Length: 132
Image (cartoon, rainbow, N blue to C red):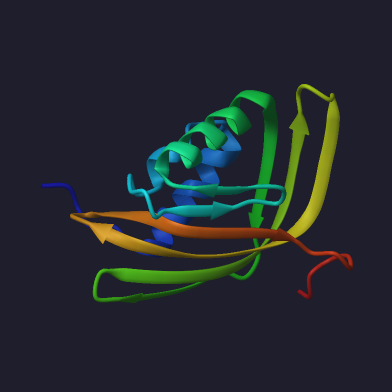
């Protein structure tokens, strides 16, 4: 049996997968009620989340995801988190660089020994850098 991981470790694994250009959809629960809000989209249901994240991985490169204030609470097979994250990436199709501060929040559920996102929200910070 695989060792049980924490929700915080799973979130950090997600950031690392993003930086490495690895598939992100396996981090989400395969359910019709899962939701992911990104900077410019709302993805509802696992099929939309999977398709949206496949597209993101195929059209972007050179990700930076610098966690600054990750806070995670775990209770009875559920966890919620918030974080301030510096995001940067290269949009391959537009040949354009993006770099800004963002806010993340979400909910995870434990399935067996694995934590999976059931909800995630990422938004850009409109007024410059986040407080350190």
